[in-house]
Image 1 (cartoon, rainbow, N blue to C red):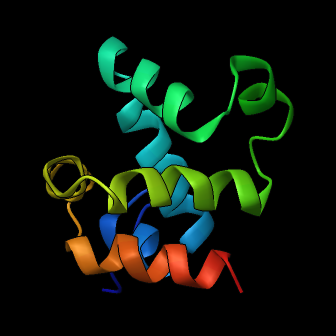
Image 2 (cartoon, one colour):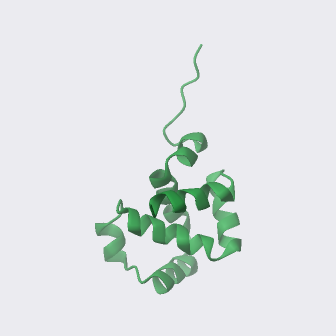
Image 3 (cartoon, one colour):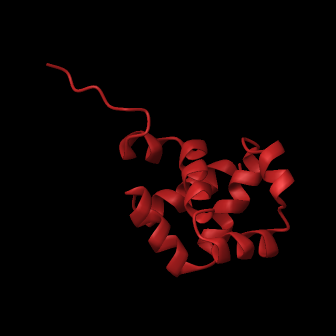
Length: 96
C-alpha cells in the first residue's frame, strides 16, 4: 500500500522553499517579542506581511532574520522538524 504524505509533512516543507519560509514565518509570529524583533530588524510591517505574504522577497527576509540569529534558526528548525541547513537553503533559493 502506498504511503500518502500530507502536503504539510516535514518532507514536503523542506523541499518547497516557499512553504518552508511560510512555516518559519508562522513560527516567528507565535512569540510576540520575536515577532516585534522581526518587524524591527527587517522593516516589514503587519500590512506588508498581509499584502505580500507570498512575495519571495518577503519570505527571504524572514529566513534572513532567522539566519542572522542562530538560536532562533535552531529553534525554528526544530519546531518545523527540518535541519537548520534546510532553512538556509530555502533562503538561498528564494534570493535567486
